[in-house]
Image 1 (cartoon, rainbow, N blue to C red):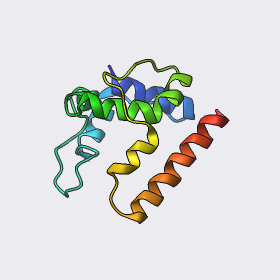
Image 2: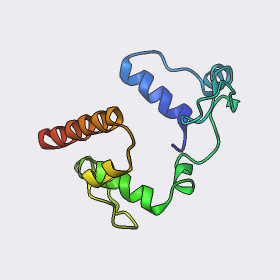
Image 3: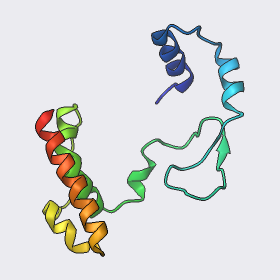
Image 4: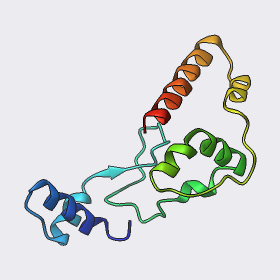
Length: 123
């Protein structure tokens, strides 16, 4: 997002809430701690709005992982206007099951994949 403070005011306007000056927004946001969404520790990375690139996750996953994500979400993503193709041929969705250990985890994954397949039919 190029200008998160402006975007926040656009959201306020959409909601019918009074917009704030960028200085006031920045001051309020500086009090809010943040960290990576995949960091489950209690340590915070900083305060305010991170200046790191929003797509930094691309540097931390392999093309195989990207292919797997696209295999699971690609049809829905395309319907929502996203484009892209994975760098590798991902495994068939049920081939994913072979890497999952434990009957409970396999059952949960099966239910999630079934939900995604049903959702895909509906949209």
